[in-house]
Length: 482
Image 1 (spheres, rainbow, N blue to C red):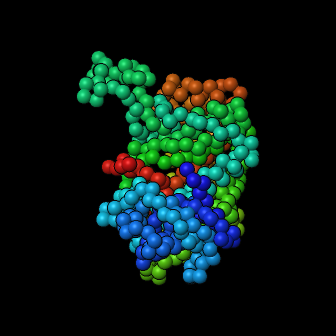
Image 2 (cartoon, rainbow, N blue to C red; image 1 turned 120 degrees about the vertical axis):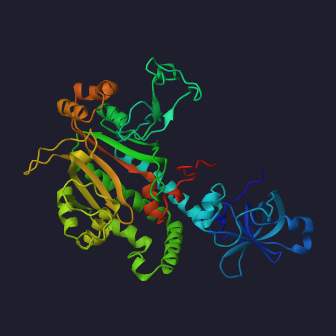
Image 3 (cartoon, helix red, strand yellow; image 1 turned 45 degrees about the horizontal axis):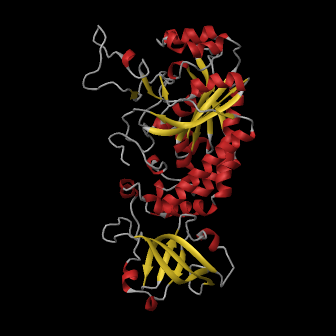
């Protein structure tokens, strides 16, 4: 195939009068003369100028929106507005036709709802070009951040027999015949005859396995797909999503908070430094959307201001108990404007409470610590009871503007007796997690870790409002298309 140049390089080039070849997809074709061509290397199009008098009508008819073409010609300085260079074509080749009557992406603004229905084509729009370039940059930055700090990248299993969260909302993995599964004497499905000879599921977290590795390598992280069979259709939930989960030994809650804050600032700065064009586009897009809203619903910050704001401020750190005190006396609570009113210690905070703390009260990212044990997972380290005899755990949640909870983590319970007591209280079978308990039997050490839902990070950095728009092919209840 002929060597081609990328459009992103040509748009910056001053090598005029040299012959170049570009290949891409037609965005628009005006006056039988001007082709706006995009090859995905950047958001910008390059203008290809053709001499329609020297091209056959049959070829001209095939230059339609969505068609893939190759254009060869001289790179010249553009005299028109909106571009500095253009290509004066001497040869056009159609690589792939696109029927203009059927191609769903036309040169106009499409709603995000419509684009979700054609997720296989939405990458060709500027919005999704920008979103997924930012997603790529954030993923790269995550790996770079941990690599620089000596963490080992660990692939934990996608298929597992454990439920790390104890939530029970898991997808089952089986090869048994659904219509006629083997059964035990008491009528239950006999999983001993299944592929893995036991009941297995898609993982909800790599944390427990990550802890095993941290007890050998000292510092590890996972970055992989996780699954929740939760029947939720909100703009913040997916059935399949990606999680970043570091685990590190000889660390306490303070170390955990610092690592999480450092990571968030690192990846946000990386995106700002490496995705300027994309973030400026998304910033302008958000500003245009904001203009359509009533004044009281408009964002206080632009997208770029919000990202800079997170870098400029140290995250506010306070305990759950202090947060409850603030929320109980807050105006929305006093005036009963919260959907879920805060009336007592022990309540599980909702997104509206988390966002109030971040956006209204402190006006900066917030790290909440020391939650009631009753609303947190079994593996979190138990604190000594407070002055009122209430049991808390060394947990932390990091709250971000517009999102609420971004990160959840804790110092892990390294004491075998405390951990087994907690498991007994919650009816978690110890024989099924014998391997996890072994880490407390053989060289146990203080350790900590957290989980970051990657799509929530992308949602925050891009300013998108629906999590289904920041993953390539969203999986949610009643939908597994593409």
